[in-house]
Image 1 (cartoon, rainbow, N blue to C red):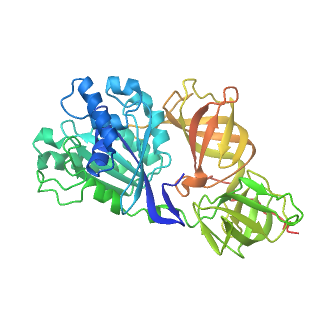
Image 2: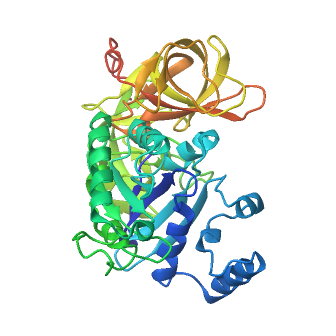
Length: 439
């Protein structure tokens, strides 16, 4: 689940971020202003926005409609579903998820945040830090988002007051001591008029920081990617059906995290068989080194039985392994989570059946405090014990988001009903000792 991408053909980083906040804090307007003032809106799009605004009797172009794509969203003036927008500048590429502010759409917000590296949380300068501010900040913390930007919006409605901005920053700083977010930035802005969105505002000379776009272009995200724990979930086994390549057997997939090198000693889980990497191939070209999130094929020195769902790891850096796991789950379905009910668990390329053995607590996402509960309702988050039919191969979520997350699927309807994050096990060793099965 990482938000930073580098491609061989394009060295420009990709930053995934999402916006959230209370209803009518201006999330969609902020994204629209960001695109408009960056000259990233086509003329026909701007004309369509102008016509739509005139039809609704609005005196100016409603930039929120760039992301509020559903008719119900436009009519009600709220964001319901997650809307994704791609844009790029000379410095960086971006994918932004505009997520809902309503409490009942918390699951949508979790979906939009699941792959993000940065959260933009909007606060209405007139209202300050409210319940939804705390709620969304707590969810961002639970999801392991490394960077958070508190955008104090609608500064034009409080006469661009430095005192009001400082008070909001003070209030949030006190609250943020409970969060697991290491990097928090505060920016005062007006999405409606563009103050501090793309260009620095002349109305707030007391603010000496960067504009929002400048910050997004320059925020350091390279270290967010886990390059320590090499993990390669196998997606496909390559066996060409020809005489020329009758002995060729490689495995293809996307490196979830870490770095792999030719000659490296590896283990295939769950079988425990060992080998060495003989070759790494990307688009027909051989590489000496490959790193996340590159999609490559690995050729091993030994002919080992490997199939989709297996995970290749270094022998000196092993993940956790077992049928029992502790996890945090965000429940995303109208039918509550029930202890003892069977579900399908999908983790990386592996799919297995599982059961929720125990619900230890429900998390109050306004305060991060634990509460007793017998079930989880829609949009609630709780800590559970999970048992699966086949062993899971995983890392702690906060250490490695790529191998630490999973989804829960209903057996009957095949609907996604939950999203989970693994904890470090309290007792089990990383993996059992295996004999060397290499041929």
